[in-house]
Structures are given as C-alpha cells and as structure tokens.
Image 1 (cartoon, rainbow, N blue to C red):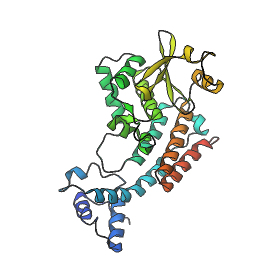
Image 2: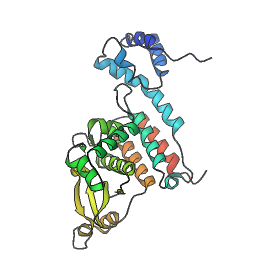
Image 3: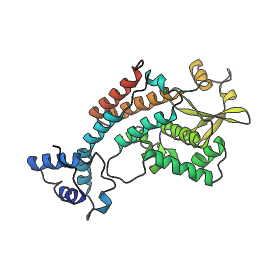
Image 4: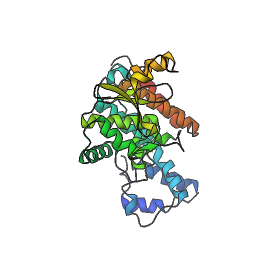
Length: 286
C-alpha cells in the first residue's frame, strides 16, 4: 500500500532536513519530497521560514523526477503524429502547458499557462484591442513582452508561463504567445518558420504584414520583403510566403528546447524532450 503524500506539517519538517548530508536522511527526504508531484509553489508561502539559495537548489533537484514522470504520463501522441494536430489549438496548447509545467522549478508561485493567457487576453480586451495589429501594439510596442537578448538560449524561453510572468522570451516563444492570444480573441495570426528566426503574419486592410515579435513587434510589408530585388534567398522568400502549421511549430519548440537543454548541461532532460519529440514526429496513425 502506497504511503500518503506528505502534508504541510511534514513538508515543513522535511525542509529543515535539506542541509543534512547524511545519505540515509537525504534518501528519505528526497523520496518524500517526490511524493508531492513536483510542485511545492502553493505550499511554500505558508511555511514558517524562507529557503536559502542552496536549499532551493536541492529542493528543485528533488522535485524534478516527479515532473519528468508527469510529462511522460500525460504527453499525448495524436493520430498521425504532428500532422494530426491540424487546427487543434486545444491540443497544441496542452502540449505547451506540459512543457511549461515540466520546466517550472516547482518553487516559484505563478499562474498556469492557460490561466495566464486568459488573463492577458482579458486585459487586452479591456484596453480596447480590437484586431491583430492592436494586439501587436499592446504586447510589443508597449513593452508588455520583449526580447530575451541576455539569455537567448535559456530553456525557460520554452516555458511560456515563465515568459508571461517575466515578460521576455525568444522569437519563437513571443510569436507563439502572440498566436495563442490571437486565437483566444478571434484574430488571425499565422506563424512563419523563417530560417533561424520565427515570425508572424497578420492582415491589415487586405495587405499581409510580417511581424517580428523579437524586434518590438516591428512590421514589414510582405510584398516588399518578397520582391525579387531584395537580398533574400529563394528559401527565405518561400518561407515568408508560407505558413507554419501547429505541428511544425510544436516540432520547432521541441527542437529549440533540446538544443537549449544540451547547452545548459542537462543531458537527461534533453533526452526526455527528444523522446517526447520523437514520439509525435514518428507517429503515423493510431
């Protein structure tokens, strides 16, 4: 019979043992902490004392195995793999939410991804945002979200809940947030898998405009960019004229995350995300 997860009183006692280097004690503490499911963020504010930096580091490492387990158990492989996502925005967001929960440190209190998106969409509506271009101004020109130039390869750029809380991400993270908010508000925002730099497309007065979310939402005329006289390769022009489906966007998120985890020296987590990526990119139908 499995033991019950620790209650707040036991968690408080376990936290006092975090600095105990005795192998037997460390094993017991880690085992019990793992039973909380990888997230203590709603419990820690009620604890009698704050944690030191070292204690937070230890606790995060103890919570990580449970989050790995949750990711594996809840990851959904759609029929026909990535192509099976189609226009299923709910399933697309569900995968992004699982990634976000996995990357969370398990300690910091924040809103879940879907709740954070809902609240930001409500804020935009209350601000009078009535179209995709208004949303671009609201998010990027007004600096609600911006470029994470300092930590461009930080894995947390793929944790969209963290990005919304911190107000920064990489081009892909910013673009996907823009698209998810547009979907909630009924605006058409397309993703563009430009080589090395994710972009978005909106329509304004019947003209296609390219939005660079990483550059403060700067807009460019698609017709001007794709004119043969411009110094762009054929591949780049074709990318600007096409649109990325949800499956290819999710694949790009996973590829970026694998690379970021390798750069950060987290091979086990990189292998896990590779496993999740391969499970949907190789599926042919269920």
